[in-house]
Amino acid sequence: MSTLEHNRAALAAPDSSTSHIQPLLPDESFFPEIDDFYIPDSAERLAGCTHIQIRERICQIQERLKRSKKQSTQYLLIIDAHEDLHAKLFERKIGGARATVSGQRILFRIMPRTPHERLVSSIPMWLAQAMQAAGIPMSSDVWLPTGASQKNGRFCGRQPDHGIVPGANYRMLPRSDYDAGLDGSQLEAAWPSIVIEAAYSQSFRSLRTTAKWWYNNSGRQTKLVLLFDLRRTPTFSVHIQLWQEVMTSHAGRTLRSAVASPLPQVLIPQLNCTQSTYFDSHHDPAPITLDYSQLMREPLPNGKSNIVLTTHMLREICRPPW
Image 1 (tube, one colour):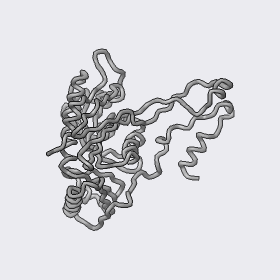
Image 2: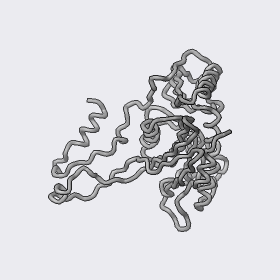
Image 3: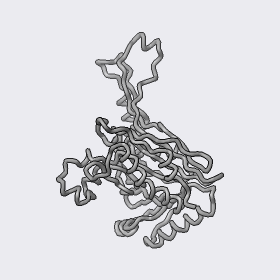
Image 4: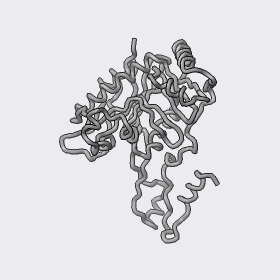
């Protein structure tokens, strides 16, 4: 019996002391695949290359994407990335590409460089303004941006486009530590409360997989995942989804069974797409609201409010670079 099957069987087995109660099976997100380093069939594979050759190949793929508007995110798998090659590849950012890493394998997600970089470079400024408007100052003892820093999950590591670690995760450190710039083990160990990623012509299923990777691998610490999906056909547009943790009650019982054997309400945490909107030349996006307590990992205090990315902010983030 596999680990996954064993976990399901253990949850389904009735407790002898409460055998009249039907145990609840948590959301499917609590059972990620044993290895979440998924390699698409279309991924191009490279071996025995230098970091310069890999960067050149990424640029060639981006040029191909630039010429063909019908293609979606492309994937490049490096299958023998030894430690020295890994260090050289990531000593500076690769525009329009983000990586998932598992041992000596690196899977690059490659998007058209100019629109991707234009979008992700504007996100930190507008998110900081939205937080400022909600009474959350941009201060090192309140929250810190993570940028594209890789986070290591159960089986692989992944680079986001942006993220935030709230002060609740490092406020107990000596003042000198975070005044000097918290870029050491403390920040690396803290999972962001929100992650933002840009994709290119991805399916709903692919976007959901991205959101659940962060939710599952963070042990539900990353409760907010904001996704921007860029599309160029038939015209340029950006589809925006906010995935967040919600508490849902068990809905698998009929009214008759509930009356015959009433049970206390049990709430189950799930990651759902709770808000979605889109931008194009004829349509302005609706505002996106971020829950304060999930973002800052503390109860909403007096004088503070939820964080709103307004229509104007999202329009400026999404507008094309031409």
